[in-house]
Image (cartoon, rainbow, N blue to C red):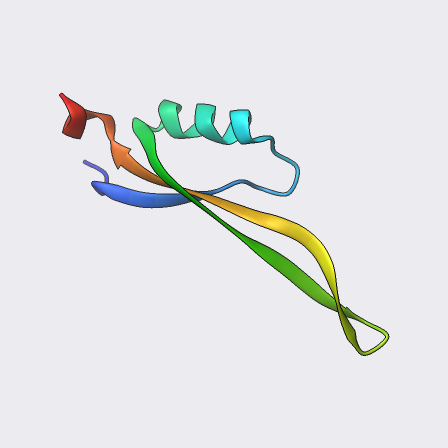
Length: 64
């Protein structure tokens, strides 16, 4: 049996829908979401790179 609650991150080459499908295939449902910006350094200054999106997921059996 898997963990009751885990975090899934939307991969760089993955859509949100693909991530949610991957979660369902693993037997989890999204119960929360968090986002945070990811920066990298360009010419000594921080520059926005992308948005990091994570879903808090719980085992489907916990909802039955």
